[in-house]
Structure formats: structure tokens, C-alpha cells
Length: 409
Image (cartoon, rainbow, N blue to C red; front, side, top):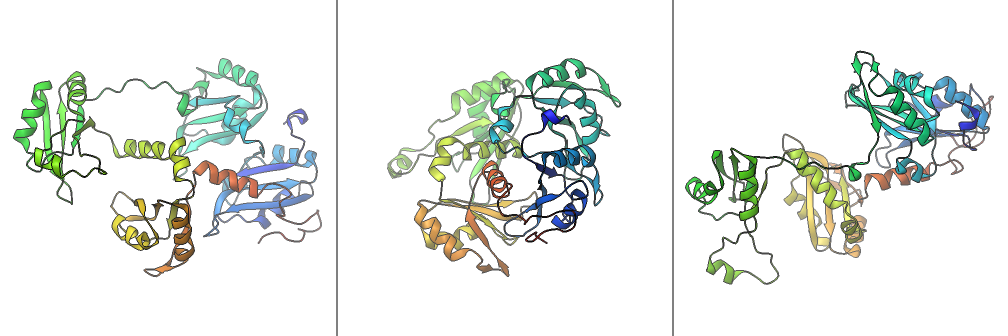
């Protein structure tokens, strides 16, 4: 990397680390380049397991620059590490300036090959091929340049070029919130809040007038509540049924009279049938909306180390003595077993604080619970970055002849 591209501080981010890599290992590798000031492998606050990245801080910018040039993508415990300058200003990462998206990558292209291809056009701040849990490439990657000009040149020169066995598509990276979403075409719809006597005959009578139904089914959940799926021959029929029937009141006069004023009426819901992944994305988006974030700040708790048999009801039972619970969920896997964590949302910060005080480290079914305030992934990562920034007392001064006082084991 050219010296002109180096920042005026000597801090490097080291990512894609093997879980067993320690500060001592990194010290031995990086101190061979120049005197290291401090090292930190970032770890989970509770389990102390490595998060797969860390920071190496040199005394001199020139040493950090040499480490970046000579050690980037070198193997540490069998994994190629990814090194880049530590960006203290999050606005640079989030702005999207100089960031490009590379699609249709050959599955054999790794981080180093991607870096070597795109480093011809300018100083790269970060470069990564997206990989699945097994480490295999997903076929796309990201390159973040220091300048917008370098990104434009890369797009012009590499878009449509063959890399490996595939012709890649290179475009400006667009954040998900800024992308144009094409209208969704669908024929399958989901129906809930139907009457207890709802059956196939009633379904076809209610929905058959909007178009030809190719298939339909009425099901019942564990609580005896009925719901249905209906597939139309055309998108237009499905959209018309949703438009006309969603929100329709199917309650009897008796049910309307029994309706409590503070309860929301159970009106008919008719909408596009969604996959499990789509529903999860929508729930996440709704939970992280600005209004929701402000409303839930300080009352939404994250609970970890739960037993695999934990259900929503049993999780609520554990915490309901501390106050009014507005929502509770024990996260489940595809086999309907608890993933080991969940969320409990209280109506007030005082109730949440009491729950944390009483329940944190309490042993439930042989496991000590972790209970803390829930926070967005971005906020948690930023907190960890700030905590482990250079000069935060990570490790004492060191040099070539010793590791220095205070380095973690």
C-alpha cells in the first residue's frame, strides 16, 4: 500500500481469525515486523470465545504499513487472515462512498485473489468474499476503496471481465434501504383470524369469486385456531382477494358485544404467503425501526444459555414476576428446539432492571443464565470497537525483545 494511503495512526484490524488464535500468537507474528504497542483479540463478554477479529497497534505507522503489505492473507492456524487499517470513524464505513459489489464470482476466488484483482485501481480499505458457515464462497464479494474515483475506475474496467471461470458483474454497492424494490408477483395467499367453523366449503365460497383456485387447505394450530392457504391461477386474482378481504369483520353481533374496549378486534387477515426467511426479515425490520427502537430502549432483554426445551410460555413464566411483559420469544431452530437464547420485553425500564438484577447468572435447568439489555448488532459491534480502540489499556508497551506488561493470555 502506498504511504499516502496510510492513516496517521498505526492501528490494524485483523479479521477472519481462527477461534483458537490468541494475543500471544498475533504478537509473535506482528512483532517480527516492528515494535507492537498493544494487541487485542475481541471476545464474547460471557463465553470469552473469540469473535474472529482483533486489533494490532504499532508504535509507528511505517511498521503497520509494512505489516499490512507483508502479512495480509497470510495463514494463521490454517486460515488466511484479512488485514486492513482500523477505521475509527464509522461514518466512512457506512457512507457507501467507494464501495462496490462484485457478483457472479468463481467459487475458487478467495479474499486474496479478489484483492489482487482490484488493488490495481486504487487504495483498498477493505475487501471480502462472502462465505457461508462452511467457509465456501457464496459467489459474491465487496471491495471498499478509499476514493469514489478508484471505485468508478474499477467498475468501468472489471465489469464484464472474466475472472477464473466466470464473467463478473461489478456495480456500485447500494445499501438495502436504498434499493428499488420491484413489485412482488404472487399467487399464494395466507388467511388467519377466521371463524371457528371455517371449512373448505366456506373458503371456496368466500374466495372463489376472485378467480380460479388451483389449491387450498384449512389448517389448525396447537391452540385450535384455524388458518388457511389459497393458491390462485393468476397474480391478479390473488391481489384482488387480498385487497377486498383483508381487514373484513367476520365477527357475529354477539362477539362484537363481548369485545373489550382495550382489545384490538380480530379482523380477517389476508395477505401474500411468505417464507419463514421473509417473515424473519420483516420482524427484524419492524423491531429495529426508529420508533420501535426508542420505545423499547432499556426494556428489551436478551436471555442466553437457555435449555433446548425452553418455550415462549416457560420463558415468560420465568420473568413475569418482575413486571408486565409486552412480548416474549424463545428462538427456535428448524426442529422446533430452542437455539439457546431469547428475548423478553418489559413495559418499563425499572421492571427490566429488576429482572436483570435477579435473573442474571441464575441457574435454570443446570445452566447459569445470561440476562442483559438487548441491543442491535450494529450497536454491539460499535461498542466493541470503541472498547478495544488503541490506548484503551489493552496492553502495556512492548518491543522486539518482550511482549510487554498487561497483554491478555
